[in-house]
Amino acid sequence: MSDTAQLASDAGSRDPAVGLRAVRALRLLVERLEALQVENARTAGWSWQEIALLLGVSRQAVHKKYASGRGLLRREK
Amino acid sequence: MFERFTEDARQIVTHAEEQARRLRHRQVGTEHLLLGLLSRPETLSARLLMARDVDHERVLAKIVQILGDATGGDIDAEALETIGIDLSAVREKIEEVFGVGALDRGPHRNRRGALLSGRRAPFSPDAKKTLELALREALALKSRDIRDGHILLGLIREGESLGARILVGAGVDLPALRAEVRNAL
Image (cartoon, rainbow over the protein chains, first blue to last red):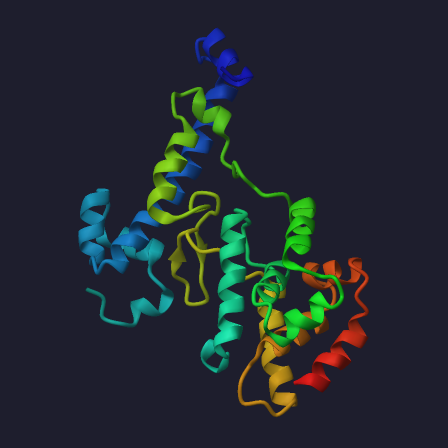
């Protein structure tokens, strides 16, 4: 077990610094995973609507985050 | 921009991208372009560089010495371990599907504003400049194609970049090399 993991279990994971660090690392991981999976789905021909449905967000949210600016001028499926 | 690149020139750029990914570097830099130039030993630029004792192995060693290979990435693996997530196990699964280094680079926006994953490493400003200069060198030399030699000329002109500095560090006289490439093109 690493020092940090040892520290966390010693402290019963109540140390906010340990917990917050974990959240930050997890967010970074999620951002990267999401970008990989969204890109993969688009490459496979998925629509924004289909991607949004599986991510549990609105079509607008996923489109705004990932689509190119020019995409707004095009008709998006 | 790559339409006018010869097959060799394209392979050089592809090799540069592969090397950046393999080393888990965040961007494709001029140092990776230099590796690309050395990946095709039969080309003019590789022959001129190897005549100066600059080879792929040596440049790769130098790059790793300067930049390291970012194995492990920048995600805090220890912090994830405290909540029971084994980052190396996650990385292994993801790399099986998306290739080496896919988790080591954050998403980035391309010129058109689309958010792209870190699957491909983007070109650094220096590397982009080098490729633009390659195009200009080709135009100046009235060449219809952009060849490996033009990329090398671009790299020499973008003289402050890591790729050029590695050449200087290896004792290469850049102006002399530039003259020789231009003559041979």
